Image (cartoon, rainbow, N blue to C red):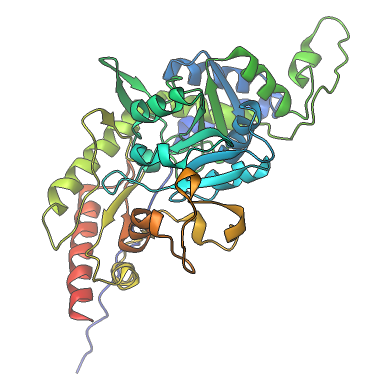
Length: 410
């Protein structure tokens, strides 16, 4: 008697995959062979191209999205003893950059449909110490900037956009579709990590309309140096530099910047592919097995950097994810809550604001209920331009089967 061979397991569908090809290879090669590989002419060209792509007067390239957020806090004047209103429901860098400058994060809850800051919570969070609002375009979905800015302007607060995930996303602004990064608020910060829509491997960008802030960030990213190395080396006369500020090593390399220029050219096609895939997910998942697809407001066009689906709350998030993994589909838990992490002990943050202290329990906060529900009852599923229709169908089948299995307790 012969034994049938085991059923072949299909290759794992990853949660994300960078969209790169020989064009990025050629760009990196160009920079490498130029003899100038650190921050230099390619970075300048990248900044110019990015500023044009988002219609920003100024764009300053840095080594990461976290570096961008840190510099934004610095130039916005946030410092020791200040408070910055933000969301716990974000990657930990959003909270960390506030603490880097000695300020205190004050967390407000999110809207369940968009996973973004709930503007109706802002007034109660403002105190005499509030210096800024740090809003997040979560997973590429634009937050309600108009409502946030209305509150901020009444209280003379700086608004910083954590646009780490939002390259290519758009917002309807005064009757026109405009890209996130155009200075609708005071400053916007991007990440070019490999999971982002536009990637340089690592890297970041800060856009603003303020020339003084841009000039300060350019000094701070290079140890506070008054004259960038490339400008010094290409000057006709000897030009010694001075060090005006306590700065950082937040430079982007020319190799990364050369890749970034190609990525900017590809951005429209990458966003279009993501939006098509997101629309397909919404059509296939809405109304099935108690799943809830994310909501895109009429005034927003997400780049769909991530696609986060809410599960029925009586199901085990871990069980669903494990079932999908066993069927060759990678997932991720929904966006983290910083207030639950050991790196953010309770004494370092607040959820009270002017409304008073919260009677938080261990690992829970009644004022951040929607943030915690999103973290505990939602998962991210694969979405990237190279995701084939057949692979997307596999994701949907695996998810529906996983929900059924979790319901059955198997």
